[in-house]
Length: 212
Image (cartoon, rainbow, N blue to C red; front, side, top):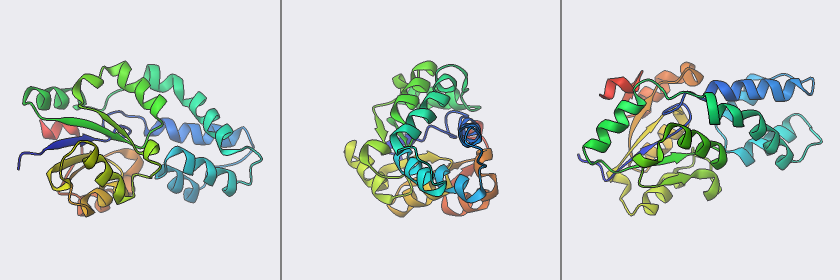
């Protein structure tokens, strides 16, 4: 099947950024004398910014409002997104290959738009994409199947004609449930759930270089 659209996730799929968020969590809570729990890490790792901030406030009974929490997170991560986060192995080569083949591509990310754009601009990724779809602007988490229906509709393509490259297991499963062909991409952040990714995806790769 020749896809109508190839969607790429950003964090953990095209850029090696998930470790940055682990450090942000530890530093943010450490400033308040708190520790990251496994439950907390799991929830915020699967959430868009506003949901994660509200959960953080409630989980740790913080006096900070969600916007203040998001502003602090963004300030802590901004430098990394603008200057230090690298592309994952094979990302540039795969994008070049697909572009040379005339494949239509778009970005589909749950990342904070300002940070995502900082990484996109740093690595010159925008030239590869027909457009960028931010789950946060839709007010939905990427584990919600509706995100993928909306993304397909945005680009006027059927869900059954879409391919998604994604590292998060729940997102892979959600996209597959609406008819997307899903390529699971390994990331250390979800290492313990690799078997779940393999089961829910049509193809699973340890590196983007395998797709070259």
